[in-house]
Amino acid sequence: MSIKIALAGNPNSGKTTLFNALTGSNQFVGNWPGVTVEKKEGRLKNHRDVMIADLPGIYSLSPYTLEEVVARNYLTTEKPDAILNIVDGTNLERNLYLTTQLTELGIPMVVAVNMMDVVQKSGDKIFIDRLSKELGCPVVEISALKGTGVAEAAEQAVRLARAGVPMVPQHSFSGSVEHAIAHIEEAAHGKVEGGRQRWFAVKLFERDAKVREQLGLPEPLLAHIEEDIQSCEAEMDDDAESIITNERYLYIASIIRDCCSKKSQGKLSLS
Ligand code: BGO
Image 1 (cartoon, helix red, strand yellow):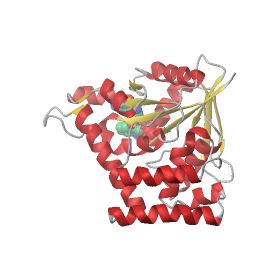
Image 2 (spheres, helix red, strand yellow):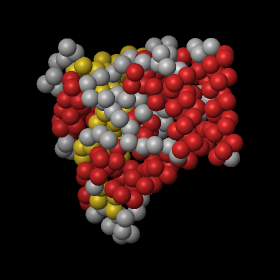
Image 3 (cartoon, rainbow, N blue to C red):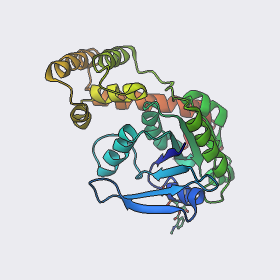
Image 4 (tube, helix red, strand yellow):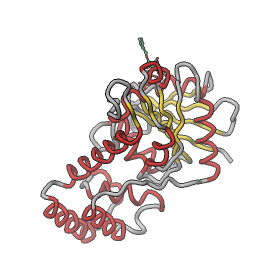
């Protein structure tokens, strides 16, 4: 059975370098459906049955740029068997913002921490095992430029895809947000396919207009969801989108504290 792996990451994380290292000359270039954003796909070297789709470089899965919309439409509708998420190890804090959102899709996922040649030279440390535990998925150190760890990262993604191991996000938002999200998941039950429920519920909580449209939820259901959102906003004295963003930053800050140490300043952020 053939396998589809989505390569996702921030601009400048080394995604193109990794895609080229993984696929060599086995690449096909086209456009994403309906838009002029370039779409690159390629066969994984030594795996004729594994296709890698190079998603546009993005910082978030919000609906605000064409690249973000293309990437999230692919992830939520095309059913890739796994995500290979490349993050820049010299800018981990910023790159994990996308990672935390990808984990909520429930798609089997491997995180490849790139630029490890630069990180190692600087004397900074990333505790990969801890990072893996805190994110809830395999994490592999790579240098896309030097080719180290690249095959292992791809093999891990293929292994997870074949095994169909769903991603289970380790992060919980604060009590009242989780309460609202649980209600929303319940309300939208049956409208969203299995593992993607949490991602869609978070987006509905954020009042993401494109997701509302995509799901075609009836008005009474949207009104019910709006009540949940408003009671959470009243309790937290903030708007829904900011609540989610702030809580993501807090989560990422705690990951950085636990998993990184900067040579010069002890355990601090690498960004
Ligand atoms: C230039 N290690 C190091 N040291 N550099 C890397 C690694 C790595 O593991 N991986 C990628 N790079 P893209 P996106 C460049 O182009 O793949 C470098 O946007 C330069 N160019 O070589 O393009 C990579 O697809 C002149 O660097 O990223 C590239 O995600 C001087 O990171 C950059 C220095 O990689 C971005 C670097 C004319």
